[in-house]
Length: 329
View (tube, rainbow, N blue to C red):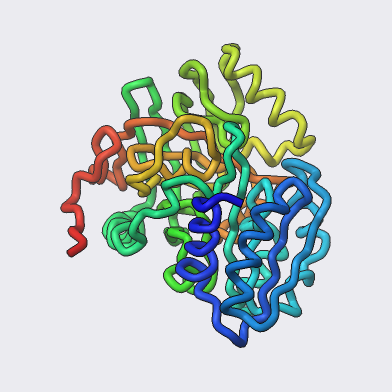
């Protein structure tokens, strides 16, 4: 257990989850991440009287299926850290916990460089700054009907969000009104049947790492209809086919990264989608975000340097906020 891992665990338990002595905390993990679980537990026992662990079988991208089939699994607890390889925030069990006003933190630990996600520097970003940035962007997202995004690589995509409310994650469950994710971003659960246009992925492919070359993906009526035959496209197609669920091709989320400490290098799923100067399209399940789409999973495709428009107002230019940015004193 490294010093940086202990630092990350402290940020998660004390600053993000904000546990109290009376909380009944559950740490969900897999055998591949027992070291991170021990670091989280070591920090938690100093703050909470009741700390339990649940080690689930790591079934890879399908780990969320268990939490869809066992919605009540979090009922005995007041706080949950989902420290598994893949995100659980969009599962039915998470949605039930959130509705019951439990503290829920999604902590996907997937990395591709051999380091623990708890050791990454991006966890140390000032959450006050991310909160102010998010609120500024959400003001414009909230009252728009559609979002258009273009990029120098060739993205020209429209997503629609009528009657869909934006939200934001910055790790802090209090800011998220009871739940959050380690991803620092603004998100919108977009309409599932309307996304249209071209997405050029030149950042990362979520859990499977860096996009080695820009790859065109075509959306029609809300879903992917074509993936360019590049090496990156072939990797993506194989990965998506393994879900064995046609709903994974549906666009369910539009996100904007807000973490100025993050870099999109393909090393860490959460760092990639959090990076300031990026946007992402979340595919598959979006129930816990406020959408209507269920699926066997959820992952994000990340693009770089977006120009983003809410209706006809530009809010980002080449990945930088164009509306006045907040200052943290």
